[in-house]
Image (cartoon, rainbow, N blue to C red; front, side, top):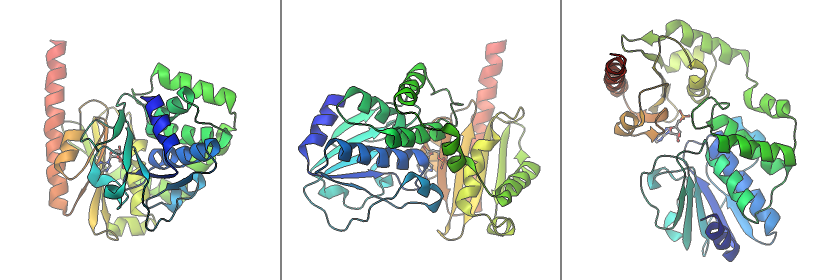
Length: 319
Ligand code: AMP
């Protein structure tokens, strides 16, 4: 499959690389790394990495502005369903390649490489560059490492496999860079965010089934001078709390007129509940968007049911 992807890339002069809406480091890193690798291998090609960016991840590089384009190959990264692709000219693509690590939702009608056991789309690209003639350099390796570290939550999730570590080992050996320089870009944050994290810890509501939730209204976010995106991104900082099985951050996003929900689990599968509320994701890391706090409450009720069933099943194993 990797050779087929390589041959298809080789065939086209114009290539557009897209990914999901609501940019995150893995999606962006894989886009920018693939663009740089294609240009390094085939300097004459026109390659565009498209979609809305975020100042927060600007250390990874810049996206391209693209007006009208035709006769192009579209590569969609890190996106399981069409409605979440951050690129309007999807239908005009001559051919499509999808590379993703999310559980399968729908086919895009082209070449598809899906590995839902991979830690990240960045990890799949590490494998693609390793297996084909697509070239790599230190910046590409660093970018992919950033995407992988971010989506695996610093190798904390079970999808960090022996393959993940051997790919990381290969790239760090052949394209060395200073890890702490990258971590500074990824993890350095203002004190106001740490204070907001303190507010979350103090006010987290934990149900009898271990579902922890916090509602961050626009008022609270403004009080801490944070923004709604960085508030939701704190979700990964609440792992491994003894009393908590599933945790949820509900953030009012006045600018986009909706409510953003970030969900994590260390046991019960949560993606089906997320899908019911205009969302989706992985079994242990999902997200959703709703319009009212009532909907958010219904989602939390559904997560409580999922946690209750999970606990019942675990207890039956112990008997
Ligand atoms: P996040 O909490 O934003 O880091 O997202 C965790 C996972 O859920 C990622 O794989 C996202 O792509 C996915 N996800 C987040 N929000 C949504 C959404 N509204 N619809 C579908 N998938 C989502």
